[in-house]
Image (tube, rainbow, N blue to C red):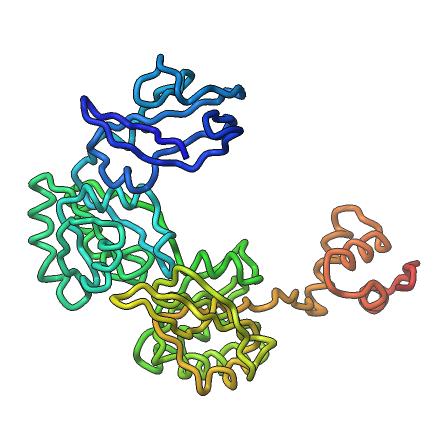
Length: 403
C-alpha cells in the first residue's frame, strides 16, 4: 500500500491507492495513468495536485530526497483544467442514473456539487442520489404540476448569474420529463443552456435490443386519449424504423393490447427495464417463461439494505407472447418498449408501369432485348414476365434467357 499525497497550497490530504509492488519497500511502475478519484472531483473549485509516472524502473519508497512520498521519480500533475475552472452561470441539464448509481458521470457530479440550486422532479428520490455522493446542494422541486409556477423564480436566479442544475428521476431532463418549457424560456432570453450527457434508457435499450439501430423513432409516452393513442400507434406500425416507447407500469397491459392491434401479434418486441437503483445484480430465470424473461435479484440502497426481486434487463419475444408473459406481472417504474419496424417490402410495379419503363428505354436507344433485361433487373418482376409483356405490347420476339 502506497500513500500518495495531493497538495493544495500548504495543505495536504493523503489518499491510499493499492499499487503493484515488487517488494514491500519497492514499487514497480507501469504506463498506467492515475486519475483523480470521483470523491476528489466533488470539490471542483479546489486546485488539487496528483502524482503519476510512466517510468518502467523500480524506485525505493523511502528515498529521503523526496519529502512526504519517498518516491524520487514522481511527476507532479495538476488535475485537468476543466476540472478546476469554475462553472459559468446558466441552466445545466444533468443526466442521472437510470438504474445504477455508478452510472453517473464525473462531470455530472461536479456540476451538481457546484450548482447554487438543483431542480428536481422528486426531491425524495433525488435526495438519495445526492446523499450517496455527499452532495449538499439545496434541492427545489420542479415537476409537471408546478413547473409553470416555478419558472419565473428560476429565471430570476439565472438572470442574477446563478448556476442552476436540473435533474429528473432518471435519465435526461426534458426528454419525456419536465424541463422542455424552461429550456425554451432560457433560449428565448439568451440564457446559456448546457447539456451534461448521461445515461439514457432509450439509447441503452436500443443498443442491446438486437433490433435495427441505423434508424429509429422515439415516440415516448403515448397520448392518454384512446383514439389519439390508436392513431399514433397506427402511424408507428407503418414505419420501417425501430419504434421506441416509454410506458408507465400501470399501463403495461393496455399498451401491449393496443400495440398488438396495430403492429400485429407476431411483431418482434423488446422490453428494457431498470428497477430503482441496483448496485449489484444476480441473475435468476423466471421458471414460467425461461425462453424469454430474465429476472434479477437486485440489491437496492435504502435506509435498510434489502433484497428485492424485480424485472431484469430485457424481455424478448413477440407481442402475442408478451400478452401472456405480462398478464400477471407488473414491473415497478417506467418501462422502455422497442418494436421492430415494418419490413421494407418492395411493391410490385403494375403492368402499365412496366410498359412505360420498356418504352422509355427503347426511346433512348436500347434494343428491346436490352430493355427487358434492364427492367427485370431493376424491379422485383421476373424476367420472363417482362418478356411476355414485351411480346404482347410490342409484338416482337425477344431472346431472353429463362430464369
